[in-house]
Length: 309
Ligand SMILES: [Fe+2]
Image (tube, rainbow, N blue to C red; front, side, top):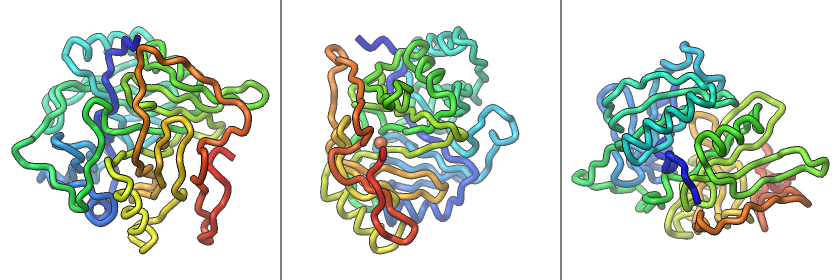
C-alpha cells in the first residue's frame, strides 16, 4: 500500500523566465492556456486548476540560497490540511529544514518549502485552487491527463541520488516502481510515485551538478502528440528527442525545449498502475529507456543514440 501524505505532482514553478516567450510557447506549441495574473506572473492552465505551470519573471528564491537548482520549484500536492501537516513533520524528521510559504496564494490554500537532498526546491501544498467557472480552453484544442494522476511527472538529474531516493521513498512514502542499475550494481535511476501514475518522479544519478531533465505533460490523444511534433518540425520550438515509447510507463512521446532551457516530454498513453499489487522491478541489461525511438536530436539535425545509451 502507498501511505504517502503526498498525493502527486501538483504544479511546477518556473522563475527568472521570459514571460513573452513562455506565452508564445504555451499558445503556439504545447497548447497550455495562458492567463496573466496582473502581478508579473503567467499562469499556464491544463485543466480546472488556476495554474499548473507558474511562470515568474523574478527569481526571488535565487538570493535566498535555499536551492542549488535555481529557476524551478516543484509543487507536490497534499489532499488535506492533515496530510500536509504530517508531510511537514516527515520532512523535518528527516533532518530537512522547512520554511513557511506566504500562506494564501492565488494557486493554493497554504504551502511550505524545503530543499531536497539533491538541491531541488520543493513546495508542499494543499488546497490547489480550481476555477471551473472560467472554462479551461486549450489554444491548440488539447486535453491533458491530470486528475487523480497529478499533472504529470518530473525527471531530475540528482547529484545525491541515493539520498534523494531514501528521502522520497522513506520519509515521504513514494512507492518505488523501478530501479535501474549499471553493470557494476551502481544506482543509475529510480522511478517512483505516490499515486497510480506509473512514475511521478524519476531520479537519475549524475556526477555533475543537479539539474532538471524534463517535465512530462500527457495528452489524451496520440494525434495531439503528432501535431505538437509537427509544430516543432515547423520550427516553433526545438525538438530534443524524437518520438518513441518508454518501456516502463509505456508513454509514446517526444521531447522539446522550453524557453527556460529544460525539456518537456509530450506524451500519450501512459500506463496507470495499481499501487496495491505493484512489484518493484530492477532493470539491468542495456539500460535503454525505450522499446523504440527516443533518439537524441544532434545539433546538426541528425538523429543520435537512443536515451539511456
Ligand atoms: Fe519522462
